[in-house]
Length: 296
Image (cartoon, rainbow, N blue to C red; front, side):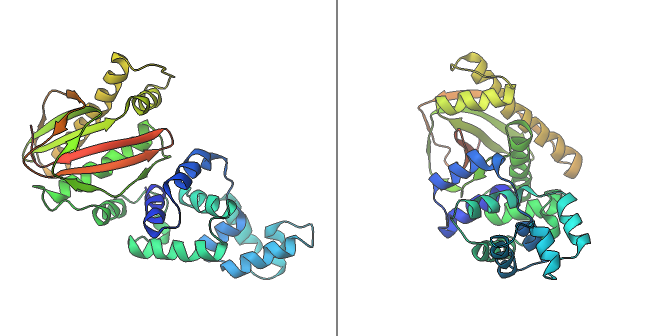
């Protein structure tokens, strides 16, 4: 999850624009994390030391790890550790920034420190396995003060992003949420959650994005928008909301019911309350998630 929010962090800092973000999302699967970047992330080397080794490599035909050991920056054991340890996806984004010339190693080092500080992330939590830390990340990124249960909303959005990773792909970046008095839909599937926590939920996107979203969800290529596309999007929302309801019942004893799914096109959603609008950018388009403390 930390990888996905790093893109939004860079957007807000003005380090990249949306076009550069999309380019990185499309191509990051081809990026190879360099040993120097890993050493810098682990705190074994500074950016200056990494750049020194890179300069030395232009004069001698030796690998980075070999030179780093000769210069006393790394031990052979540390080189082995960096080569075999699990590599967090978070670093892939950073490596893509350096490879494309958007930032230098020095700038990446500073950005990583700033990101960890702003979102209260500890280095060892970059493996995305720390549920509490992810919840803190979501809580810091969004405000749910107008909802009956801010903790429930944090759980909802945390599960939503995890389900996107699980069913659609991890190559996305959530943008800043907006609070709107109303929302103009394109192709919106929605469902009310009722019970101890009442909430309107929706997923909205244009036709082209809907086709790509459904293709990923179903695991096969779809070419035209039809009832199967619509049904797959409905299935994703219903599945997600069902999992959320089960989690809330099991974890905190909150019982919830789901209304039948609804669909609207080119309509205005007005709920006599706020609509929290959360855009999520994938390489194939932007998916808009909607939450409101009022149901329809």
